[in-house]
Image (tube, rainbow over all chains, first blue to last red; front, side, top):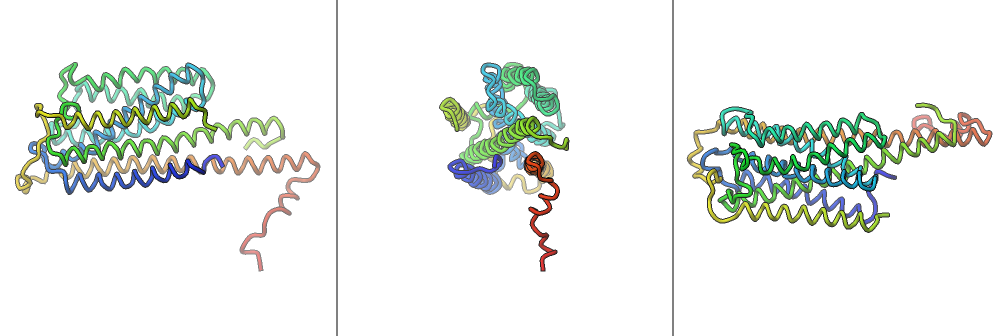
Length: 237
Length: 120
């Protein structure tokens, strides 16, 4: 069956499920029992250990979707197309996590939920871009033109991801800069952060895997239905 | 069957992900303390300040909720595809029988296993 994972893939799949579950357990333990309270923000800084790993997973997924879309335009690969769809959709899920957790942290740290600061604004724009991509793929049909337009949208996301990365330095945003600047002073903070990245990347990988399988199964089903309609007189249900 | 370029792409993506993760981890532990660095505090400082807890609980709850809702929706879509496959299979079987001259409904009734509750 198209939706069942068999053979060597099943071992890899189960290993990834177990590994991701363990990593999330370790993340929660390290966040709440090992990582110390931050000197200025206190306990609310612990949002960082979910917020930033989710943002990193989001960026990786959008890059994957953009690269896969380049392949779609280049050679029309159906697998690359499924990867682009899956990565974009899970990327939007991660974006929602980032955009929900960030303002809660900001409310305590900055005193208000939202600020039209470069990184926040660009992340919102990036999320809307990939929401448009996902909506186009979900409701725009499956013809070649729709796929090409959607691929163009995903590719346009790649420079936007780079801008999200450099926006704070480029436009002097107020967003904290600790990840690339050695700003995690305590070793337990670094461990919690590293485990968080691994856990979210593992979760994103698993979800993308499931989404790609679903996409390929749905397409195979459509082709089978068309083929069967040509051979037999089927009901229109 | 997976082609070699597909495998190579998968390996390249995995390597890129690993490199990126390592780079971030290494850079976050670089020497020197930049402005705005996260520094650990004496826990006794925060004994009286619990105002951040509702935000922390809300953030963690919302992230788990979003992920669980997505997994639930993904599961529902997978179930829908499974149902469509079963429906299409039944239609193809019926159409194939009809083409071979046997009434699909009569045949289906014969082929259908007895309902567990109707068995003696």
